[in-house]
Amino acid sequence: MPTAREIDEQITFLQETGRKISECFSAFGSRIDFKPAPEKWSARQVLHHLTDSEIVLAYRLRTLLSDAEPKLKAFDQNLWSATLAPELEELALLKSCFEANRNLTIRLLKKIPAGLWEKKGIHEEAGEMRAYDLVVRNTTHCLKHLEQLQKLNEASQAMKI
Image (tube, rainbow, N blue to C red; front, side, top):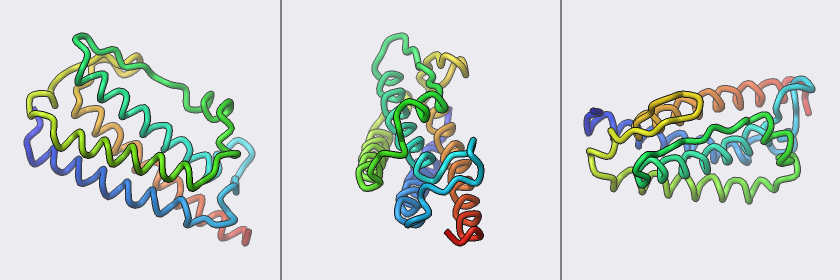
């Protein structure tokens, strides 16, 4: 079972990465749609994906905490990116959606009883996962994409776009 300190660290990490991701929505300016290669994602696509991921985390947590035998659905990020037209989304709307979902998730995590952090569900791809595992997976995911955004920012600045 995760300790209270480990849970607090994950919640703090969600807050910090949420702030950093929110800052990225305006950091790119006119370079938001720059792609280092045709098959790579732009910053707008990454931010859209992070917003989608936040919605998915919120749904998975609620399913895991509420259902008797939780089944956690996977999603194909490339298919979502190809079909949901992230390049057409307004950044202000995406940012608002990301922030609202992140804040609601943090509020939820702060009030769940300690025992529910151990509750398990079955993820379609990852197998058995606890609520704590979902949060750790999300924080790791966010870190990966923050690094990706930093590299995109550097590459787009080097191209003098």
